[in-house]
Image (cartoon, rainbow, N blue to C red; front, side, top):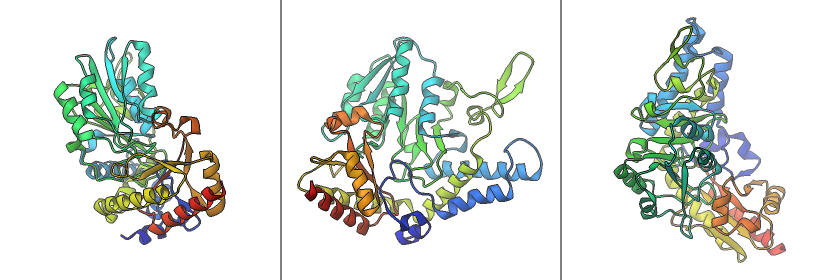
Length: 397
C-alpha cells in the first residue's frame, strides 16, 4: 500500500495536517468497519455463553490476540489486554511483590506513566534510581550497569522517548539486565507499529504498548506483553468474572494467563478493531513504514532547523518519528494554536507528560516544547507546508 492509499482510508486527513501521532493516530476505515461489523452482526459478550453470537465474538477476540502476538513475535498467551500503556505499567507496579530495600532503575527521559507508578512504591521502602540521559536525550548503557546492584529488582526504559523522539539502546540494556538477573520492562508506546518489533529478540520480561498510536487502532486498547515464565511473578489486580477457574464458598482458583489478568468485560470491539489494524499494517509492510518514517523525520528536523530562531531537541541521527522544538519568543502553546489557526496543522505543545525529560533538555522554563510526530500517512508536501508556515510565523515574532 502507498501513502496515498492510506490517506484515502482516513477522511480526517483531507481537512488538516495531522502531526500528533505520538498522542494518538486517526483510525483507518477498515478498522472502523471491523468494529461496526461486531456491533451490527455479533454484539455479544465473550466467553459467557454457548450460543452462536458468543462463540463468534469470542473467536474474533482471540483471533485478534493471535494477530497481535504474531505481529510482535510472541505467544498469544503472553499478550494481556489492557486499556492503555499506563494501565499495563501499573499492572506490573502493583502486581509484583516488593520488599523493603529493593530498587528500580529508570531513566529521566520517561513518560510520567513510567515514573509515577515507581515513585509510588517508595512508601513500601523501594528505592528508585534515576539514570540521566546525555545532551541528546540518550541513555548510556554503562550508566545502567553501574547503577545496578544485588538489590535491583527491575530496570525499565522507554524504547523511544515520547518527548523528543530519542531512540534508546534497549538491546544493549537487555544484555546487561539479563547478566545481572533482574527484571526488564520496556515502554514501547512510541515504537510498536512504527518500528518492526521482535519481542523475543528484545529479551524483555515485559513490554507495554498501546493500540491507538503506532498500531493505528482505536483508543481504549492497550497491551502488556508478559513472558510465560514471568506471569507467575505477577499478582492479578482486577479479580472477578473471567479470571477464575473455580470458586468455592471460601476460596478461589485463578485461571491461567492471560485470562487471570483480564477481569470483567473487555473492550471487545476495540480489540477486534486492533486485530484489523494489525492486518492493515502488514498490508503496508513494516519495512516500508520504517523507511518512510525515517525519511520524513529527517526532512521535518531539517525544515525546523533551517528556521533561524528555532531550537530543535535531540540528534537528527537518533530520533525517530518525533521532532520537538521551540521558536524564540513564542510560547509553545501559542505556536501550536497559530499553526492550527493558519494552516490547520495539529501538533502537541507543553510538557508531554514528561516533565523531567523536558527539564533535562532545558525547556521547562519555556513552558515545554512543540512536538510534531508522524506516521506513514504523512507526506513530504505536508512537512514542507509545516516548515513554510513555521518560517512565516517566526518572522512575525
